[in-house]
Image (cartoon, rainbow, N blue to C red; front, side):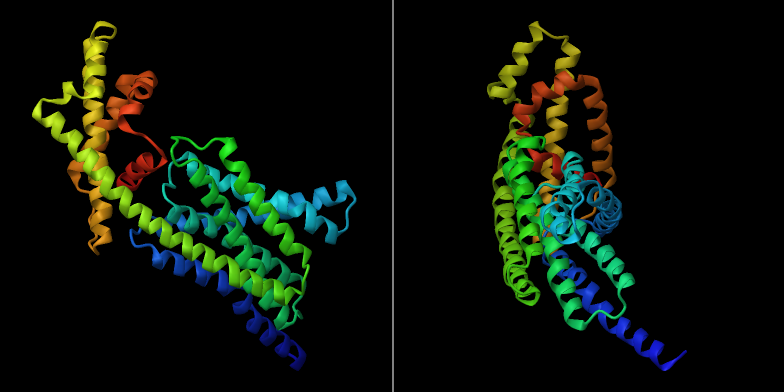
Length: 344
C-alpha cells in the first residue's frame, strides 16, 4: 500500500464516524428517553432497514425523474427531491399507523426518526463512495445537518399525523397532508442553503433536537394522564359487568335492545367481546403503569388465551358487530395500539 493510499484510507476512516454516528446516536438517545419502553428494538431496526430501502428507491427514481424533467441537480434537489423522498418515507410511517404500531407521540418520534436515520445512513454511504476526498467540514454538514434533518422531518410528519388522527380509529389521507407538506418544506429549505451549509447545520441542531425533546416530554405527560383516566373508566366498566349492573349502562341498554333484532347468540358474543376487550385494555394499561414505575412485566399465558378468545369473538360477530360495538369500546388509535403492545 502506497503512502497516498494509506492517507486516503485514514481520511475515510476519520470522516465515517462524523457522517454516520450522529444520527444513530440521537436515535439511541430517543430510545433511552422512552420511559414506557413502548417501542421494541426489533421494530426500530426494521424501520432503519425500511428507511435504507427507501433511500435506494429514491436514488433510482430521482435519476429517472431528473432526466425526464431535464433539470440540473441543484434545482432538482431543491424542488423535486424533497417531494419524492418525503412522500416515500411517509408511506413507511403510514404502514405503521395502519397496523396500529403507533399510538403516542413517543412512538411517532422514535419510529419516524428511525426511518429517516436509515435513509440518511445509506445516502451518506453513497456520497462517501463518490468522493473519498471530501473535507471534514462537508461531513460535519452531512452528519450533523443533513442526516439529522432527514430523521427529524419524518418524525415531524409522524407527530403531526398522529396528533390529527388521535381521536380516530384509522389514519385518513386528510390527516397526512399537513405533516407531509411540513416535512417537504423543511427539507426544501435546507437544500436551498439560504445561508452557508455550516450555518444551516447549526440551525438544524438548534431547532430539531430540542423540538423533538419537547414533544417527548409532552407525550410522556399526556400518556400518564391518559393511563390514569382510561384505567379508571375501564375498571368501572368491568365492575359494572361483574356486578350485574351492566344493563343500566348505555352499552347494556343498547345490547338489550338488539335481542329483538339479532340472534341471541350473536348478542351474547358481542357482550363477551366487550368484556374481553376491556379486560385486555386494563391489562395493557397496567403493564404500562408498571413500566412507568420501573417494573418490567411480561405477558402471561392467561393473557395469551384472552387474545385467542378475542380473535375468535371478532370472527364470530363479524365486521358489522365490531363496528356496532366500536362506540362503546371508545376505540381510537391509542386503544388499538395498546392491544398491539400487549400482544406483541
